Each structure stands twice: as C-alpha cells, then as structure tokens.
Image 1 (cartoon, rainbow, N blue to C red):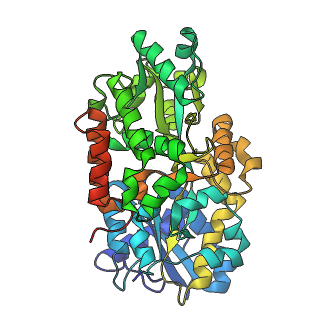
Image 2 (image 1 turned 180 degrees about the vertical axis):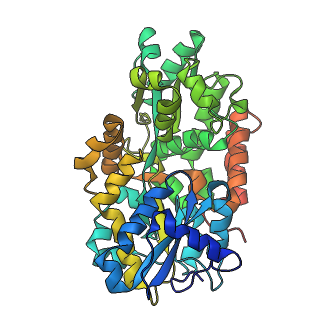
Image 3 (image 1 turned 180 degrees about the horizontal axis):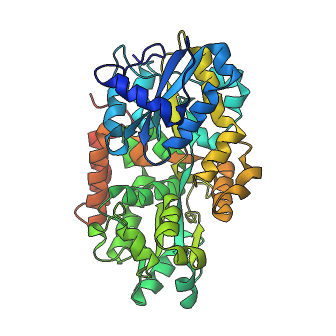
Length: 441
C-alpha cells in the first residue's frame, strides 16, 4: 500500500540512492522531519521537480508539517516497470508517483491505494483552482481527480511547412474536406502529404483519437475508457478507421510509413527536409525541430489545431494529447498536511517559471501573464490558449488504457494502417479483447 510514512526505496542499496538525492536539488531534510518520497522518471526535466522539492523543504509549510520531500529519479526506459511495482500494493510504496495519465493508475485508484483529490481540491483553492480545468482531466478516474499537474501540457497539433504549401498555392486545411483536397494536390505534386512514424503505433493512434473525437465527440472514447467496451463498435470509431484507411490507400502517408520511426527522429527529418508537407504530432515536435532543424523551425514551421469534421458531433475546440504530467499521492493517513502542502507548490509562479525555462508549457491558471518568458512565446501561448479554452481534452489512447492493453491497441492500429486489417476487424478485435482502462482479469 502506498504510504507517506514509509520510504520503500531504503531497502538493499536504497540508502546510497537516497543519500545521492539530497544533493540533487531536492533540498536536505531537517533533523526530526518525516521524509516523503516522490518517484519520477529521469527524462530531462527531473531538475524542475527537484527544485520544487527544494523550495518546499525550505518553506514554513515544511517546518510546520514536519515533512520534507526527496525526489527519486528512475531511468526513463525503466520507469513504467518501477511505477507498476510501486502501484502494485504492499506496505512499502512511495508517497507520490509521477505519471502521464490515468491509464497507469486506474487500478490503484479504484482499489483505494491512491488519494481521491476531489474534496481536497474544494477545500484547498490553490489545488482546485490553481490549474486549467481541462488539464486536470488527464488524471481523472471515474470522473474524480487523482493527480496534480506538475509537468507541461502536450496537445497533439497539425504542423505544416508554410513555404511548401504556399509554393503550391495551398492553405493549411481548416476542415476535413480541405485536408483531403490538400492531400490529393500534394500527392499529385510528388510530395508526401503527411509524415508518419508508423513503426511507432502511438503516431497512428493520434489520427484515430482525433477523428473519433471530431466525428462522435469526446464522450465516445470516454465511455470506452470507463469500461464500456461495446463502444469500440460505435459509428464514430468505424468512420475514423475508414477515414485513415482511405488516407493510407491514397498515399497520404507515403509508401513506407510503416518503416519510418518517430522515436529515432526520421519522421521529423522527413518533414523538415521537405519530403512531407505536414506532420500530426504532439508539442514535442516543436522542440525537436528547434533543436535539429532550427532554420526550418524559424522560417517555415506553422501549426494549427486538428481540423473540424464538417458533419461531426465533436467540438472543434476539443484536444487530444497529454494534458499534463501528474503526481498522485498514496494513503495520506498520518501525512496529509505535508503531502498537500508540497502539491500546492506546483501551482505557484516559481514552478510556472521553472517549467517555462525548461521549454514546457505550464497549465497553472495564472500562467498567461508569464508566457512571454518562454524561449518560444508564440508557440507557448498558442498551446496555452488552446488548453485554456478546450471544452474537452482527451488523453492519448495509449496513456488512457491500462498498460496491459497497450500492446493490443498498438498492434490493431498498425494492422489497420498497413491494410492487414479492415476497419470492421479493428473495431471488433478491440471490443472482443475488451481493451480499455480496466485491468485484464
């Protein structure tokens, strides 16, 4: 059982690990304090969370609660395994765990091993009103919040090459019909309309998630996420699957997209080098382009929300992606004040500024007036305003389902895009496998 009164990592070899963390920016605990531990991935932004722990450890709140926080980074490629173990029960779990969305934590939340923050957020305005409402939804389990946003938002956007489209007399597509027409024109000109890293199925799932939302509304996948597996047969899912098959058959992703990877940078390179005109990807694409292709990013890069589907029921302001990265708390018996005081640190201007300096887009309610401090204020403000105004923000399907179902979801998407499966088979298999956020059992 997750508990703030136990330091699970101080077992064999753990004392050395803990000792190393004190000098990592977390702030040394004062004598006589109770040490809370936070499990996080070491993915390049760990210092932002360590700085928050350091600020808390030096605060009056830490002194009055008798608590301090130590951040335990885990190599990013091993984090899902560590997270699963930490959430798996027992008496020696960490106090706080980081995750990118509710799929990873749903079982622990439903088994009451994580803290439901709904009433706490009502009692503590800095938690309840300190963040953009749509950004909180990524931590929801059964419509209840189980996490506090601590990392930046990553909505999925349609990036495009301004110079390439303008050279062909084309405009960025504003709706689905325009997107299809633009793709046809580009293909006739010998240019791949959309870069797609098809060897990483998450890229294909982004297309499906947005189309399901635009056609049927956010509630369609919401029902699946809540356990209604029959909704895989919903007309919006079938139409979305047919649309992506039609695009693939028309060459919209090129002939070799199944061999192209996003993870190794080849999809991004294909886009930046003019071999593809557009790229549907989350906001990390901007950072990748700025780092690897700064000239392209500065002069040619454009971005827009996913286009509306004209006869669809979904609000065109809805988003798909990663609303934020979250910390969820274990059993707060005996440690409520210290944990909640620490979580409030993530709604402060200091943390907002730290995220901006790290190139992330904060989701704190008061961030708007601070966005000009971002290294890329135009893009940062565009994202922030989208998230602020979004009627709904659907978590990426991969992050929304239980980890045990992710291989099946990836496999079915890959088969659909490659033509090894039909839209009907895609929907039927996911329904019959009961793919969703609930743990297989």
